[in-house]
Amino acid sequence: MLHRFDKWMYKIRAFSHRIKNFSKISQYGYVTSYTGSVLEIEGIFFPVGSQCMIEVQCHSQEICYVLAEIIGFKKNTMFAILLKDVSGLFFGAKVYPKCTDNNIHFLGKMLPIGYNLLGRVIDCFGNPLDGLNKIKTEVYTDINQFHIINPFKRAPIDSILDTGIRSINALLTIGKGQRIGLFAGSGVGKSVLLGMISKFTDSDVVVIGLIGERSREVKEFIDDLINSVNMNKIIVVVAPASAPSVSKIQAALYTVCIAEYFRDRGKSVLLIFDSLTRFAMAHREIALSLGEIPSSKGYPPSVLSKLLFFIERCGTGKHNETGTISAFYTILTEEEGLIDPVADTARSILDGHIVLSRSYAESGYYPAINIEKSISRTMFNLVNKEHFKKACYIKQLISSYNRNIDLINIGAYVHGTDVILDHSIKLWPKLLTFLTQNMHEKSSYHSSYQQLIKIIG
Image (cartoon, rainbow, N blue to C red):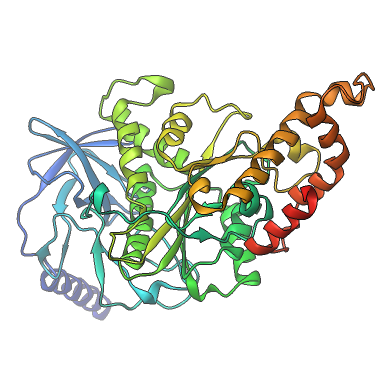
């Protein structure tokens, strides 16, 4: 009898607790379809981009709630995608507005921002992934709200960004506020080069977005940063390959919002975004789920337009502001070809591109930068005429040698036929030494230029 009484008291207390925390919101809808990754919801309406709570059945047969994001609508039907993979979703599951303390937050994307993020590794919701305490901040940002800088009010790119990479500093000089694409296939040293740039670049704040990367690479990349540099100026936002598409997009937008926050406060920000291709793939998945018509390689036109808009948010600030965002975006390419809608679109809008060569990587030359195919569109305005002239001549020497390498190897080339090729053959060992750099070696801009002068005088 006593056991039955205790059992009833436990149920009464549990019911009382549920009543006490019961939401004042009585409006809800129903899940009517779940196909692929897209939910169809009827009976309630939310703005696109807002978040909602959906019932699922837990392992204990109780009802739990998971977050989903509204991605579109058609007549009386809303389309949503879950923010994490779950089981237990059922037909007719109730859908509620996302709320906190019984207050409805339709957009629900107020994420923490500010100086307390420095030195932390976070996910797309601002939750810590580094095992440290929860981030405490009084500043929040809505990643759906952003401002576009008038092109005529943007400050020019007129100061050099010292990346610490010898070949980039001397031959592909980059300016503060410049946006560069890093075009590379798999296994050519992309992650190593990004690590060198993040450690050696002269900047006030480093914001790193790892979008769609393998969890193993994410951990190795962050461990290398922790062991090599002071993490107090670095912020890392992570959405691994296992994350849903909406989480990858949210992490990408969150990364840029953080960079904009520090730029607007006069900081020189280095943004490393890896990768732009997987960000586009996440948009493609959502667009195709909504029934958009695919075009080149399955990418709907809306994806490429969002890509351009995303890139344009970075760069220099207004004329009267000193803050800049110098951005490096990685773009995955097949071999060394740039014939890809994402690569082609990015190359058309970026201020330069660095192409990594598989043949250089296979020969053991790192960083495997293909100087011939790489360019900085602002270099002419950043360096003096003598520096620019020497850099162009070095590119001529490298190009001439690579075009005739087969003739040189079999001994078919006759010395004296081509003056530039003769000079490139003579200087080739020095050029290789100049282009290669140990991953723990830093070469300042001044040092890089002095070594360039020593090679060709």
